[in-house]
Length: 185
Length: 98
Image (cartoon, rainbow over all chains, first blue to last red; front, top):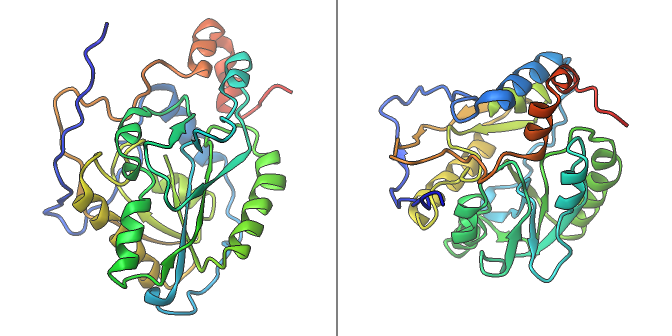
């Protein structure tokens, strides 16, 4: 039985070096590092979509979108058995999360990350409570009522891009979201 | 992973050197998570050109026993490649079987 990992409460530490350049692969190792580096090299430049920010942040409605495979315990889980049967496949669907979601009422379904920290405190990868604090402090207009999660291990993204992403965009428009923070997991 | 985000033409990038599974900070560290979220939203306001990137100046502490986000057991594809090592070329080429 391996020792349980303890996640220390340590606070964010600001770098001495304010010109810090983030190392994309510092915490990625083995086959995943090799795979990501190779895939980055396979991408070709393409137009970058751009929507200007049309109002101050203090007036914006902000939504979160996570790739951590988060679902309410009362909702359908992401299909992990399907991935276990066919490791080339990942569930390309999405789940809606209310702004009241916490680690107590969600599960994480993602076989490529350690779900335990977020099971203790969802905010370490899906900062809903922090977003509500920014709303209370008047730094954003509001957190939207609904937030979203996909499960990020998708080697063939066709269904994700053709079905899931347009559906999330429809929902975000209905939510009148001005800003979406995509949080990779 | 800003290199990945840049490669897929993400409009605005707030890069952070934190492990997967804890991209906003440690569980229970509300002040640290808030600082990171605030820095992300500040980057949203400051980036004025498509593909603009801000490298957030946060440092992840080296803690004893921290596995940096590795899952409790290896993902299915890793086990599959170990059993079928010749298939690694397909994975690297993103040649996914139907």
